[in-house]
Length: 438
Image (cartoon, rainbow, N blue to C red):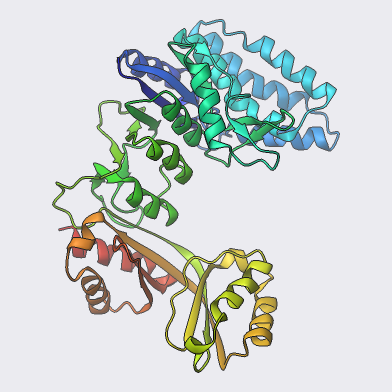
């Protein structure tokens, strides 16, 4: 029998009604054998996510502020669900264990990880599945970096002992000292992908509160078309530019084993969602797969005559921003020019120091700085087989009165990025969408 791995996000485990939906989804297909869960999300506008409450709890513990009221609030989120569903998952006993850990001394990561831990305990009781803790199975090195191969081996060994199980997302433990380690926010997507790889799953179903991905941001483009099928590579490009339905690091474990990812909607379980796979959809009539972008970039442009003859010029320039712990997003170049496109938030109070070092070490003829730049990525595997895609983008923007401040196309030709002034971002996105999607 094939194995399907499911991950349910915070909105899907927010209350008893949502967990009933999970139970119906899981029981509708006997191949759905392993479930990964997040901590409960918001139940309504103005509500708090449990993970945010746990961060607040840690702050109170750390500063010796009485925390009983907040602790009880968090406990009631779980016990009310347990009571409403009529199951005995032992949640109150688990909170006794957590309080004991707090009194003896524990880490912030331990406290924050309990959101997913308790979700998994609760949902394993609801489903009648085994509970498999991520601690000791999702493994990190002494510096808190995920150990992918060691994790795969540990998960494989454990899952082989359980026909059906629920696994908490977001955390694991260090092989050095056993302490709890966290993935980045949204990291339960990554746990789901790791479990899918270890279970040799036929598909990884990622259940959330949207029916898959859209070809553009619906806040910018009216009623954008859904994306039915997309490649891992295209998803990576779109995620990097802000299309955040799935944690971008979740792609890699599934991709290593060529496991398709299906983005599904817990609230609309019959919707097909979006399939993410190695090859995407070669039968699609669309040239592009999606458009994504974001504001808030600064462009630093360095001009120096005969720059191309100066060995090591780019290396020295990059070393300067590295010394300031600043990442760059793009580096368009010319014969005598080098531009660095950097998220403005990365620069903060570092810009003056960076410019001073550029002038001291590189001896440029001129440096200019432009902020309020937005980047828009047009992505599609079929673009590399189609003549004139970049020309169509440029012409459409020019005809609409949008000035292009930067143009960059990767050598794999699946992504064309344009830089425009932030005030033109929404207009430019709509123009590009309408150029390709009729």
